[in-house]
Each structure stands twice: as structure tokens, then as C-alpha cells.
Image (cartoon, rainbow, N blue to C red):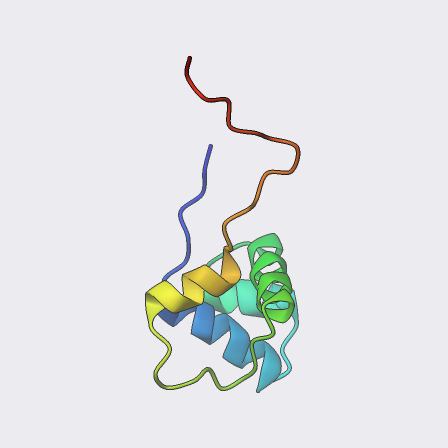
Length: 83
């Protein structure tokens, strides 16, 4: 079952608690009412996206999601034209 994405506010809270406050993933999870694996996943995605704290003031929710969840290019797939 697909999980819903966190709100930008909650993502920012996770990043702040980790990068500014230095809290553990489990402490952040408890504070944000999410699982520690979700915390780890969002931190991994943020690091891979090259995000830094604080987030840019002009970064909108759509742009944040684009960085955290880039469209995957499927390798080996091809388009077969209709006859």
C-alpha cells in the first residue's frame, strides 16, 4: 500500500531537528509522530538531493517534492509504436 507523503512543514521539521538540533532519528520520529524508518528515508532523500538546512525561503512544496521524489527513468524500457 502506498504511503502518503509528509507535508512540507513536517519534512522541514524533520530536517531541522536532525541538522540543527542533532537529535536521533528515533527522537525525531517520536516528536513528529512518524516512524523512525520514515525519518531515515526522508533524511536519505534530502541528502541525495543535496538539500541543506535551512531550506531556501523561496522553496515551495512542489519543488521540495521534485527534489525528494525525482521521476525515475526506467532503464531498458522502450516505446513500441502502434502499427
